[in-house]
Image 1 (cartoon, rainbow, N blue to C red):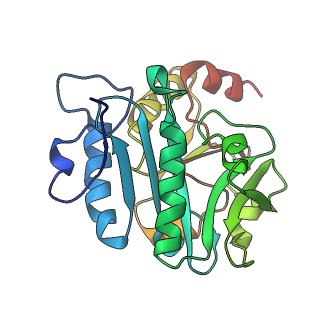
Image 2: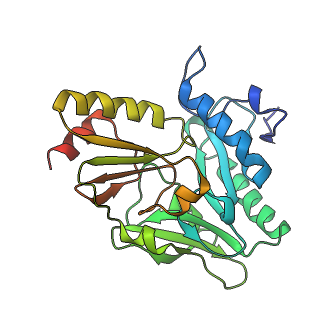
Image 3: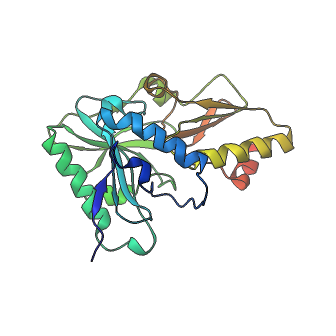
Amino acid sequence: MEPGFIDLTAENIADQHLCCIIRSKKPHPGVEAKRRWLVDRLPEGHVFRKLDVKEKVFIEYAPLETAWVPVEGDNYLYLYCLWVAGAYKGKGYGRALMEHCLADARDRGKSGICMLGAEKQKAWLSDQSFARKYGFETVDETGYGYTLLARSFDGTLPRFTDQARAGTIEEKALTIYYSDQCPYAVNSLEIIRQVCGEAGAPYSLVPVDTLEKAKALPCVFNNYAVFYGGAFQTVNLLDAASLRRLLKR
């Protein structure tokens, strides 16, 4: 029998696998932080829909008004992540998840759905070529390589905030903005502490722990953002190799 989809709720979230590659017999701090973050988001209309398996087959989205991203618009949903990996690719699960999101948006009377994109596909962003098959188009862009995609139902369009479009800060040292939404952030932050400590490189880790902070960010953000030399660098989580390359610039 084929597994079915389930939505996370306050009643089942404690027992559900959160669709990450992270494998740990003990509670993982990043996974548990994500679980706590989700508990607070679900009453806001946040949706985490997953295949009932312990693998990476899920979609995560929320009303734009309460989505932790520096994007503004009226009556939209924001699609954080659509991920189908491993043996489950090519079996129609991605299509089923996207079609569910589109149907949910229409049922809620939304004006459309938007998501973060880039001029060149980024590893930590949902597949924008897949989204374009469902009518998503570029509706806004920054000057540093990132775009906003939207599937509009009524002709209205969302946009990046002016602060997000700037992509600069005064601080020149490595600066990381992060939220508990991504379970992998804990691992990346530990790598930053270790590598920067070994190199004697100054750094700043800035938790984005409220909606207000997220909406006021000086760059695009899906749950993580990197600045160096006062300029925005990437939404990709840094590993040791990519961090060392960045520090050599």
